[in-house]
Length: 72
Image (cartoon, rainbow, N blue to C red; front, side, top):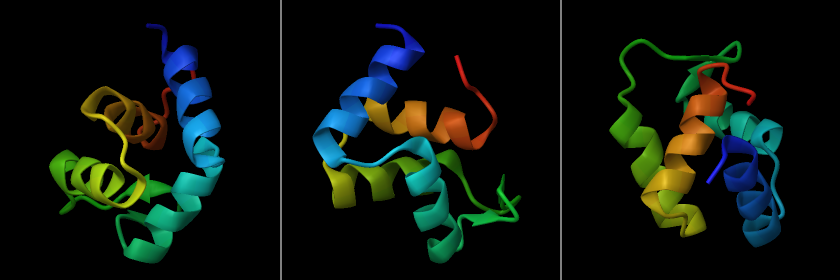
């Protein structure tokens, strides 16, 4: 599955874009000024996405990758 396919599936399931998740992650304290906070581990973010949005591991990692700057 391509990165874009993961993003499309996430948007269809949750109604949220990567930008929406970024905004929510900032509110949770995982990001600051659009960047992942140095003390925050990927697992903390993926666990949040799995629990709150019922994403699978691969889909949660795609959102995490978008936080790190991946766009394709």
